[in-house]
Image (cartoon, rainbow, N blue to C red; front, side, top):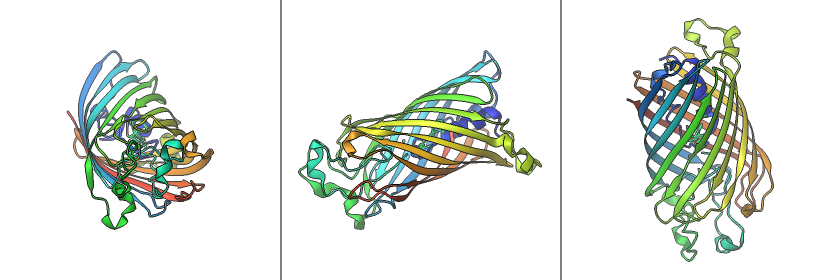
Length: 368
């Protein structure tokens, strides 16, 4: 299955994260949930059931103790599409499913130890993860679903501190698993992750998306407690060419412009106790192409991060990129993988922060 212009834009939108990155939640549309990539004629309607299974991990090498987290997600959902004039589409995507958490769950990018009045008893929390993720794009993140995909991960996907005690009960700090690095990343619990997005593509070059990525923490082990975390993403993608670049079919360097795009994505996150974590905006140019059936998307650029007031930190500019791969096994089954490194330009206080963190993920999508 060679990506059409439509599916290329969808993938670019889903992957603009992340893992985000975390996706992390990967948008089901960007990972094969596009009905085989066929252009939907004007006035036509299509419903595609989709199942996505993804394993992903975060590696916070920029923080003290270098904490890690892992999860296995199962997303079950639908993609509703309407064909529009000028080869455009309008789509609504919805998915929900369990997330098996190991070590600690994903949380919103850049989350730090809270120093406000309600967090005075957490002075020993030095190893907080920092995820963007899709997974990012996993939202990306769906750049769109990013990680739709997402993402954007951004990615990605994104906001959780699995190894911290309930924010409402600060008496037992021994349960903060990510301080016990000798224990690795043990299974913690099964949370619930959701994804809801609306995408409008008026033509073959331009696409807009709004996505909501809820995440329900089902039990103890989180600094901010049990409850519903929320992440909202707004993405705009513009493709400079027709997206039809396949080096296995004779395309050369003169055709590169056909695969170039730019993605602007803003993501905002709140923790389970409604603490505002912050927001970031990625302005990432990218390049998507095929080598026979393998689709490869590269993107990267600045991330303008504005932390919430709880952190006591000022705004900063980080830098990141993402490599995404997608390979169709059949017109109904697609494999995908992504890697998103992010470089933070400043320390976040006593826990460190300056340096690289990484999010990786891989999985499979079935469309019916």
